[in-house]
Amino acid sequence: MITQDSIEALKARLDIVDVVGSYIELKRAGSSFKAPCPFHDEKSPSFTVNPSRQKYHCFGCGAGGDSINFVMEYEKLSYPEAIEKLAASANFTLHYTDNAQQKKRSNLLETLNDWYQKLLEEKRDAMAYLHERGIFASSIERFGIGYAPTSPETLRFLEQRKLPTAEAIEQGAIGRGEEGRLFARFIERITFPIHSTSGAIVGFGGRTITGHQAKYVNSSQSAIFNKSRLLYAYHLAREAIYRRREIIVTEGYLDVVMLHQAGFTHAVATLGTALTAEHLPLLRKGEPKIFLAYDGDKAGRAAAFKASKLLSMSGFDGGVILFEGGLDPADMIKNGQIEALNALLHRPIPFIEFVITESISAYDLQDPKAKETALHENIAFLKTLSPLLQEEYRPFIASKLGISPSLIQVGRVKNTAAQPINFSHHDIWELSFIKTLLERPSITDSLLDFIDGSLLQYHGSEFEAALRGDLKDPRLSALMMDDRIRTFEGDEGLKQELITFLTAHYNRELKKVTTQNTVSFDQKSYLIRQFRDKIERLKKGELVPLT
Image 1 (cartoon, one colour):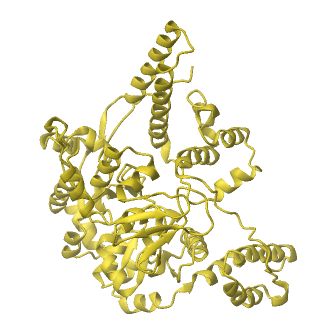
Image 2 (cartoon, rainbow, N blue to C red; image 1 turned 90 degrees about the vertical axis):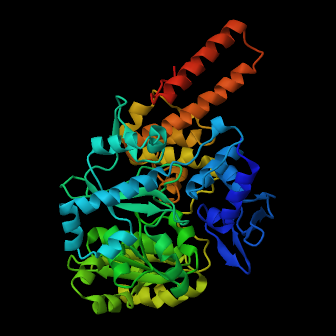
């Protein structure tokens, strides 16, 4: 058992606003914070987080407790599991009453990062690349930049340091191939340690210098690493963000390093993924203005459009800065164009204005039907905004389309824009699985040997609709539009998710059959053997067929 002193020490280190705010978007309400309750459906926020008492309470459904209770309820974990997850994210060592159970943290990622930093000093081509990009030695040290060698070298280092293999796999430092062979996740890459908001290393980003097809890679998803909730260098930028009430969001690690180097210490970056609804709780902290500093190419504009739409609909203030001509913030700083960069950062295009302009630019306004479609699209966007903003931006849309503002009738019609699905926290895995099938239909047939709709506890009918390819089903349409529901990345990531889900399913079935009195002894023995065999095979990393 975990000692009570250890639990109390962990609680003293945790901030409930940070813990809850990493899962849901909190808004300040006086000395407390409020949000729609994640444990039941509601329209008016009745869920309150009190930082002085370090407690949360929902006046609608009665849910309440401390940080540990919240993680237990939200992720459906046991009390010890929730404590261990919070301890891992806070880089805190737990103590146990039984020394045999002691799980002293090995500080594996920190140890690995120290080694990567020493290797960088010896790697001339990696150092030459960083210096060529204009990065100072002081920035290399401040951001903990390092170098990951070949896979055998990393595995040998972990073995020599007696760092636990299971923990290395769990934390995404190494992986295991289909034949059980271990491999390092980062091979011949410049490494950028990624930290939680508390400052603990939770993963890495890696940039190839050997021409590997994937220029950048990140740690795999784990209990402590979710790239859709993290922002690179947020732990270094937080003080400046709170002081200035501004945050610059870029697309790359080097942009952040160079911006900090030039004095823009409120810069962060997404981790190789688009800005999503899961980032909003972190962006909301300190209530800063958000400035998106993105590339001006087609991909950058598309990412800025999607992010601007999300941020404007969520009530954020700020705007977009696009870098044209193939330059990015890092290039401008390296070229000594800091004044020009500063001027750019002070002339952002407001989010709503950017969304409208980009939306209309996609249509041929010489074509009356295309112009009409553009009009309807922008009316739908206006309906996601407050009445005041709707009225303010009607003339702007009219001028862009070259029509009379009287044609833009938003009215008091109920918002018809696609709404996020109302889901409870225990539905998220099933929705993510279904969304993955919708986005990657080619994998469906290969999965039907292992899972069917009867195994899903909440969304079996949506699963069946997805198998039929019924994309007109409004539930599937809403699911595809809901940015809060992530998809599982890659074949290996999907496999691991399925293994976790199926293990939990067969454990439930095993528990059910052991308490059954309606079947014969022989039948019960047979079923128990079947379920135990499947669970053992799943633990070994093998997907097992349904029959």
